Length: 51
Image 1: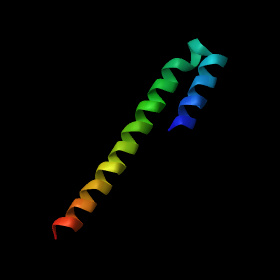
Image 2 (image 1 turned 60 degrees about the vertical axis):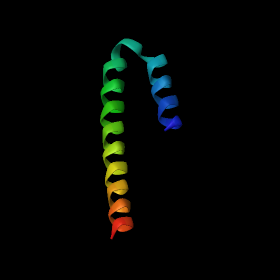
Image 3 (image 1 turned 45 degrees about the horizontal axis):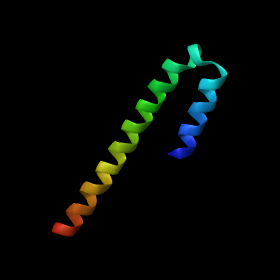
């Protein structure tokens, strides 16, 4: 996750006005996808534990 933040930071330094919105959008999209995957994995692990 840290690498992504550094990358976004570099992009913001290069073209702040142009890239702020897109970077925010991409980061939000990425983090929701990541969270969804983690939740799925957690549910799967719980199902295994309970069975």
